[in-house]
Length: 482
Image 1 (spheres, one colour):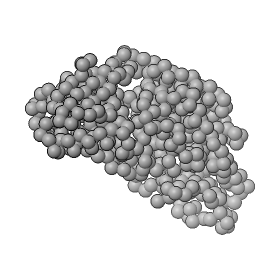
Image 2: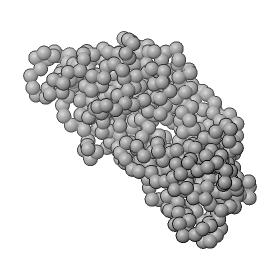
Image 3: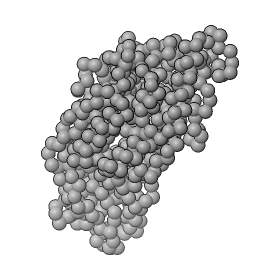
Image 4: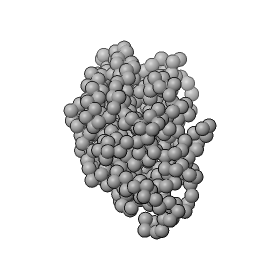
């Protein structure tokens, strides 16, 4: 798999680009055409100019540090940006100024409100038989223990499915411990199955009378950093506190429980809900010259969890999408369609920004030509995924022009915040990044800027800039009903 090499090293074929910009059906011959082969059928000066333009975008992005610099400044000058906090508000104002600085037009904040939640004291300690401290963090949205904490025997469930299949009742007053390891994968495929315990562990344990829940962190590292993240309560189940143990501490507790009939744990978690708080999406545009009402949307999400500085999740996405727009602007290009850059707010607590965007733009969603989000760190892009119903050949030609494999038979909703608009019929695509190590850092204090490789981020910026410009120029629609 092409994780260890940077693509974009070949010259872009004018034949391939002719197919992209004309909207012609995909033809495999376009990919067989090398840069040095005859191009009599589409050899106009215009096609050569298009090829030079795309190669220029790629070269500029790869030689520069656009996304890297933006992410560095965001994570340094603002730091953590939890949804609804004063820090997220400062991040919005920072993004407005950054968007204006790089030359975007129609820069604005579209506000909405979110339920506020604040972290408090969070401690866990084994009381008996082997007294010691464990590293834990509350999950987003959790209710609190009593101020003095909860001390109770631990009941162990190796997986979430084991808890789910247990009879209701029988756990009165106990602290449930759900383990279950997440498997590493370049596409993060292990996240969904592992995340069930984080999302629904408190509900399932609450149904059975438990007093509290601790889970093995949803992550793939062996560091003593617990992973936070949002959880949910079912409306018909009494809410109970829930926290995540670091991987090594989950291992420690497992060893104790395998060798002892009873392990007593004291848990103190004192988060609190603080009512509705302001959030918002930040938007800037390169306004189209011929079809300004038609929109190509590129994005990341501005908020982060509070434990790290939100570099891979998702300062990188802000840097990649804004950096791509900056490359296009500095090249002096004037796209036919509008390229819209969105920094979504409050993604971490339930895609609040994505849903707010759909509500605010419901009357113009039909004019959204293509949408995508970068929200998986800054690792190398290794394939292009499609979520369109028409014009997939254009995406294949784009992928070829960028020397990135097209993922046959895979579909995408474009990214977390793009999901709500994809549900409304907006065509999507996504650049799949190598996320093998992403969940070592995700939602932990270790999510910091030093984890980002500048060359890998430059490759992402090159991909986004090339795709956004080519989609803005393509004479095609990506919807089945157009």
